[in-house]
Image (cartoon, rainbow, N blue to C red; front, side, top):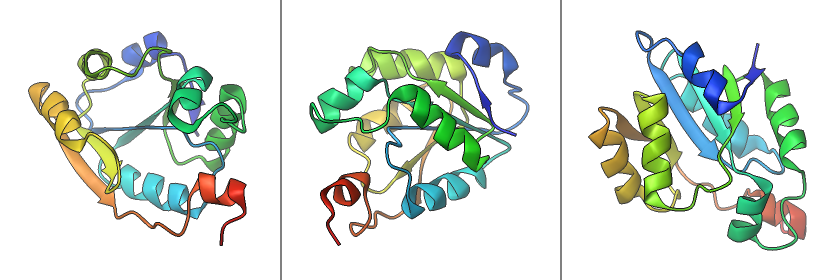
Length: 155
């Protein structure tokens, strides 16, 4: 069963004797590639934790008309899939490398799971490795499926 939890509460819940896998993202309009990505990430360890970007951050990344679903709905929708062990909202300020580093330092995941099209991979790799973890590309990018394309009605 997936638990939606605040970051401060999540930290005390984690068992670092088990392999912890961290995923971060928007997960606005859930689709098959999200499902494949999360299932593959889950197979990399024992505990899958997923951090969701704040609504303000999604607007910065995707434009003023996004997110389609507010954070609360995105958390609920992702929890219904039951793939992740924990889902938590990322901090509002999560746009600088030092924000990413602070999160990694707090959570101490063993693996940061990404897809092949994740931006800033080299930077993320440096941060996770600095804290004893590893970056793993767990799914190749399928350019045919994305929330943005679904919203635009692109086939």
